[in-house]
Image (cartoon, rainbow, N blue to C red):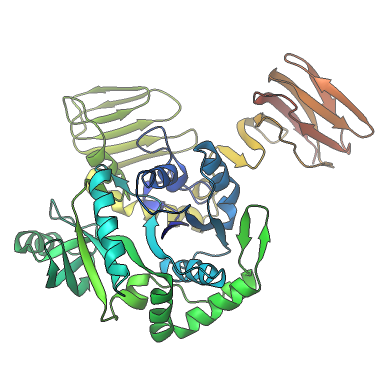
Length: 453
């Protein structure tokens, strides 16, 4: 039995402004109609011996994660909520402990939620090979057969051969400079580190207990003090925040004597930057990736993504331009790894663009600020069929609601009434109110609120 463990807790800062803290890249449809998380789960559909996945994600992304699984008709085996980002080793420990507590000892197939793999048949073949090796007590990582001297990935050095497609691990190396990366490529002695793993749950936990016993103890206590909440398992926050952040490579794979690397050549990309998106997506006759309403003249080898308006570019070569409703990024393609430095500046300035989009997602739907001033704010609100907002009361603003699509049940103090398309109502200051969508289509309305200081 194989249980996929999907690591979906990343923030994707190198893909800002598309990816943000509260709506990161794994929850966005970056290269096809599905999100990266959905693609990761759907990629397993044809794999043999695979049980429903266990998803480990940040607690602030829980409702979007559950909704995206509902959209593709997948019921996860569990959704474990991390109250804080602590890297891959604690996340894997949480999944292994919970499964063993349920008297299960499956082979874990650990997959980041932000990878692109073009050849799923080749991927399934190495998963089957990995299952057989995991049954023998090995800890497997998948090494990507390099196609270029890539400086954005870590590398794994090949050790003694185990089979035609697998070897022992001689060592891990950090992201190299271009000269070193070229040496790695020509030597045929290294693979890219994919961050994908296979091992039996009991095996990885035994290794963690040897190399990181404090981490295991904290994770056990955090699971024991946690609780089920609807579709989610909430790890105890106070306990889990005590654990040191560490990757599974540093915690175990670099120290174990049982590490094995299986070679994977399947059109893999981790889509960690806009340059990676440029490499992966279809290009026009000038080697440009153009998305949205884009006009160009004398532009080559560039990635231009227009989310909300016309973007016109002239005389660019190997550039990235990304436009959203509240931010624009311009960078040479060979500098996009440094986009995270802009995010750090935004965070230092406490600017909302680091964490949220103009459109904000909620369990009941979403809202988007259309216009705002010191005295008023205009929002477009979308409520899912059957969803209800919480009962609210505001002491510093009154609200006007106009339904533009669907129907709404409005609670206003003691009264309750139905609003249909092109009808409106007024919520006075200090009035208890609630909004509900009783229909089968999304409810869309415009809210205008006057803010009183």
